[in-house]
Amino acid sequence: MSEELFSKSSHELYKHLCIRYQGQTTLNNMTDNAPERLLKFSLNSILTMTTRSMIKLFDNYEFDTSQTEIKTEEEDIEENDFINNLMKTDVMLHAMTFLSAKRFFRNDIKIYKNILKEIWFHLYSRDKGINSSSGFEHVFLGERKSNKQITGLHNWISFSFGEQSNKINYFGFSKKKEITTKAVILNTLFTYFGGRKLSTIFIGTVPELEIALYTLCFYTRPNKKCPVSFEGFKFAIQTYTLNSNNKKFVATAYPII
Image (cartoon, rainbow, N blue to C red; front, side):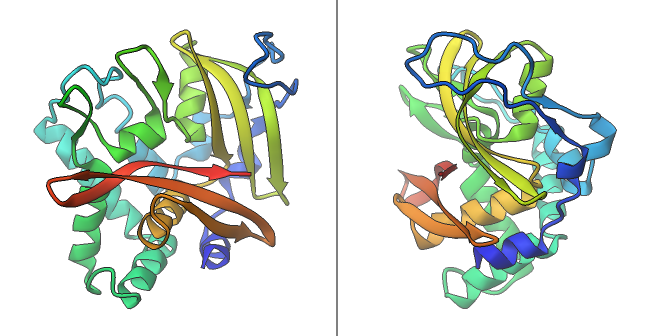
């Protein structure tokens, strides 16, 4: 199934990227082995229907989990637009149709959209009972806990935005896998608002592929390593669920190489 999602996905974004891996490093190495930014690209070159609507979400969230999220009507509309655009792609539709065939939910486009809204954008608490987080914010943007620990952030576009605003300082990588000329899976070390973070990210992938793959594993292999592959390269997706009021939401999701 993961191979089918990858083959249906667009790989045009990867062609417009300049990736500067620089030095290899480890979490225990305090030396900055990457004087340059990891990613360089023209914003216009990566604007697809889904990336454009995803980027609009980037300023909708409080970074600190100790701060209550207040969702405005405009922000709610932006989330819905992103979901609508996701469901216009073959990749996302294929994943949701597969899951409905496995009887996780009914085969209905409205139900697909409602499910994506619920598991990815429902607000819940990670810190002291404060509704300050969601699966999308954690996975795609990252957060800072009350103890100043940086968590999440597994998306290359938001990572690059953080580099450009000097909030993220890339220190180097520990592992990487280039999948022909279509995508990269990279284990990165960086600081974000001064906090140190080791995070694995896809690079060059479109949002619909990441959301589809994470949603697939969220349902079929929750809270464990989900074995997948791209063009024969085997790796895993790790998901964790957060339970609240007898419902399950995406707590986190990321690739493992």
